[in-house]
Length: 584
Picture: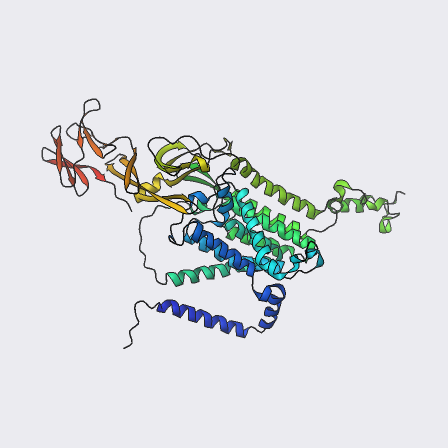
């Protein structure tokens, strides 16, 4: 019998074959495929969205060669490539094109490959009118437009999202949302359909690299999913793309989308992409989600984009006052109540249409102005925050130094990343405290809590990667501790760099709830380990916590470490007072 070699990815090959055959059959059954090819070749060089491919390859190259993803696919360097401050241009220039991990990268690349071709097709490699090539002849060259102009525009939008996002953002998603905002103005429902296509591509990727998954229930430390989304950056991208599309529609005189289709498309896209998930950080691992307010903003956004694209050119005040003028200005003054035909002599029925100023403002202009005001309102705070360093004050306690980076563990310290400006509103404040592994680099204006206290308590060990262009260093945070029965834990945190261990934090002592032979039992964390403390508050004796399967006697009570559990024995009675922390 034929045996399949274990190295042969049979299931993946079968999936690729089935998908290719089914796609070929669907293509052959499409009686409009010839027209589709002609349409693509009329707008794109050889019918291929080259600008999209170049942009995608650039983002992939940043991940592989700048962030070190080529050697560490799942563990790139992230900290130095975030948009921390205007005083740190490296982060501003790289943030939009860098990613926090392989999953983050793939998600944004899939979104780019499904949405950017719609934008590139709309813009086209072949100019539609002389107005598009009036500046220079090279602007009409399809190769220049495909391989240079479109990727350059993508790069500019990426930098803009970093400039006007409340940092420290990272990722290409702001540009992906700009693609979506542009495409929605021209192809509202097609854009929503493209989201389904991206889901298919995501599933195909997962099926190829992980064809079979075996899972079981387990404990997990999970932050709210909506607290991981850069809502402000996504909103900036969507508005940028929509405004660029509106500008192109006006410049070219292109057909405007049906109002209801556009409104539905923007609403469905915004909801499906969680643009309604407006939240704030309260400190520690606590967040607040403003679901109702966020959904109201999404409805308002859909309405404003629709009005900006589809509202008429008739002066707004003429539309509002038309009914009043019809009932008053055109009535004969002879007391008969009869109406003038065609506005009488033309003066009464004009309603001041010839006047300038506010009477000449159209509904479309008002909608565009409101979109610009909305964009300014969400980008304005970013300017104020990003103009200020996020480095914060000196870190407390011991720390390790890595080429300008300071890494430590601290609890209840002011969050230097959030508290750049002291503001309060809606019951929330920017003056919050945080606990966990903190990274600071004054030269790069970086201050960040990379690992929360809760995460480290759950995992017990976490790696923090710092670095820059062309180099990286890993700092490993380790937590060890004892959980006291009926009380808190006593724990210590060390940082390891290049094999060198540095103790950086010891928690306050914790006292077990059981009182043994009239003695309180506590464990205190120290720089080199843990100490067992026994006795009343002002009259205690102590000794190092016994090692595994060893004992120590204090005040007539024997304490034994059995399998990581600490038992107290006296007069034939044994009670557990503590257990060594176990991590996932």
